Length: 333
Image (cartoon, rainbow, N blue to C red; front, side, top):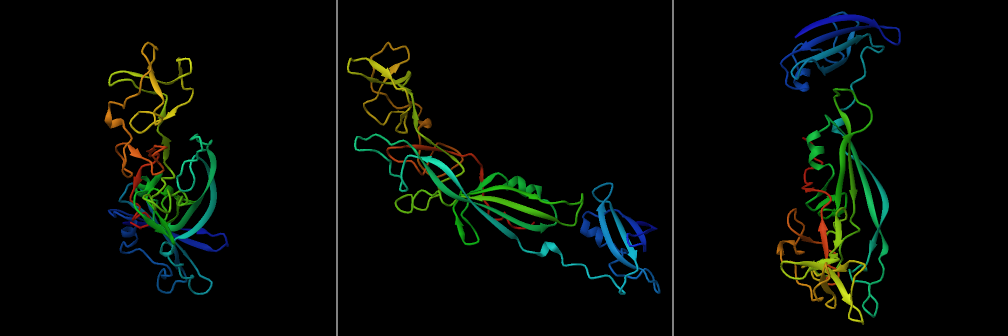
């Protein structure tokens, strides 16, 4: 390394000496700081001098293995400068929690029982309110870990996890991002990093029965299996219709609920070709079985049935976010 020095006047009017070193062949800042010959805080300039080293800053310079170290020397008022504060990166994560509510249309009750009258007609959907939590954690870290942000940002948890005393089932925690907050230098010794989560444990399927304790997949999409078109035969499609008292067939104005195979749940519903040439008949299942609504848990591939699905309201589950294991999301590299 090489060095040079200079002298200037500080804000308090006292003279400040400045020394600089260029450090080469150091792969990290920590290695550069440990370069032999660099002074440390409160070290005397020379024997008998009143000047002591006050600040020593190391920054990247002209390449990934070259560094610039700048040291200030001044005369302390009390014989030495105060001890450098404790490393802030040794501190713990500090959290804030914000409670808020969202509304979502629902056609069933809390136990997923369809709301129907004595004639079997479904009541109009009602707005249901659910509680969510916006959890924000902050702590000092050495750098902004871009790899971690790309791995977890805008994704949900695929594993069961806990934050404080909250048990969070898979897909109930959405990581909104991991990023620095506040002002920081281009090559700081540490940064204040914020972890932002949205948690929804209030939208689980039910507390009893075969789906007890299953995540409600609150950040994903649930679609009722419904439509206005189906299959007349294994080779021809048509539109669902009904036959009135005069023997005429009338198209349904709204989508009808399907059974997961492409047929209407209501066996009275018929189907007719688009040209209305054929006699209305009973619909058949979609000949492409891979397009049927399947059961099973949450997987990235295949047709997934929503845990809210019932025999009278079959529902699809589509993922709005990719999921990954959050086991080490709060770990430091």
